[in-house]
Image (cartoon, rainbow, N blue to C red; front, side, top):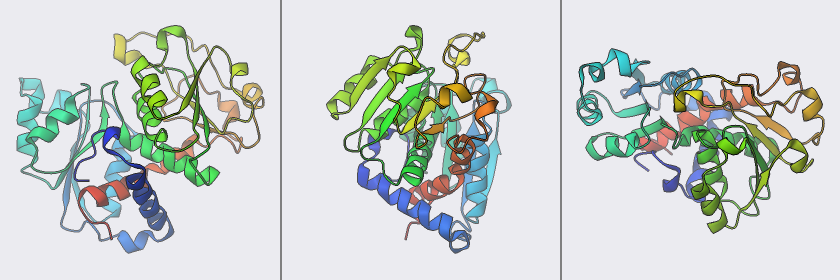
Length: 301
C-alpha cells in the first residue's frame, strides 16, 4: 500500500499486517530505530492538531527519519497567496519521501494522490475520513479486548461530522459479528451512507435515544465532541455526557474511548477509572503510525 488516503483501500489482511507490525514495534522499538534513516517526511497540516501531528512527528523521528513540517499551512504556506492544493503537493513531493497531510476539504487526499510523486497519508480530510485515527482505535480495541470480531461498539456524540466515527465504522465492518449502536442528537445522526455500508457488510446498526438503549455489556463506548468548526462555529451544551454515574451503568469489561480533544462530553471524574482508556488510546498513535509509515515507504520486514 503506497498511499493511505481512505478506509476503502483497507482489507482485513492489510489491517492485521499493520497491527502485527505495531505489536513488534511496541515489544522492541530499538529494532526499528533506524528504519527510516535517510528518509524525509513532510507533515503539512491545514487544520489544528495536537495528537495526530505530534504523534506522526514522533513516529518519523523514532524510526530515524527527519521531518519538514508546518502546523498551519492554511495561513503560513503559499495557500494564503492563492496557490492550489495540487500545485503545493507537486512542489512538496519534490522535497521529501512521503507527505502526511491534514486538510479541511473532504476530497483533499484524493486530489493530492493524483499529482504526488511520493506516498500520501491522510491525517484527516474535512468531515469525511481519518483513517490513521481509526487504525489506532481498532488497535486499542484489539489490544484491550484481545479481538475485534464479535465486538459490540457504541458510537456517541457527533456522528454527522465526526470523521473518526465515519472511518471507524467502515474499518470495523471488515470484521465478523459486529454490532454498532449510535447515540446522538437527531441533527447529528450518522449519515445514511454509513448505515447502508454497514448493512452491506452484515453489521447490525441500532439507533439509540439514550444511554439505556445501549446494552450494559457493550464492549466499547466511543464518544466524540461536537464538531462546531464544521458548520460555522458556535457552542452548545452536550446532551450525552459520560460521567462516573453513567459509566457505572455498563460492564466492568466495557472500555471508554475518545479520539480527543474532549470538551464536556466526558467528565473528568472518570479519568481514574480503569475502563477510561482515551489517553492510552492517544499514546497508541505513535507505534501505529510508525507501522503505517513503514508500510507506505515499503520498509516492512
